[in-house]
Length: 110
Image (tube, rainbow, N blue to C red; front, side):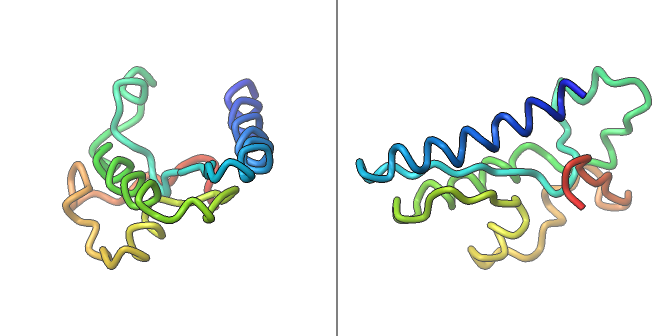
């Protein structure tokens, strides 16, 4: 419940800050992973197989693409693989921890 509330709160911050900062030419967007990301935090959860995750680099590359777009693009909720597809990157196999494993979907993306 607490994690869900935090995610919701972050989403509301994106919308609010996007509106507040638009007049200054500052964009505010969010970036969500489609799949679980192999981070130290995830490794602390018992039973999670990080071989079924993507590497953090996918988020870094997607964030870079978002940050290099015009600041008129604001108030969006981006998903990492969709951002990369828009950038022309469709082969995501290098981002997999173990490409032979199925990917574990993120809990908040359907």
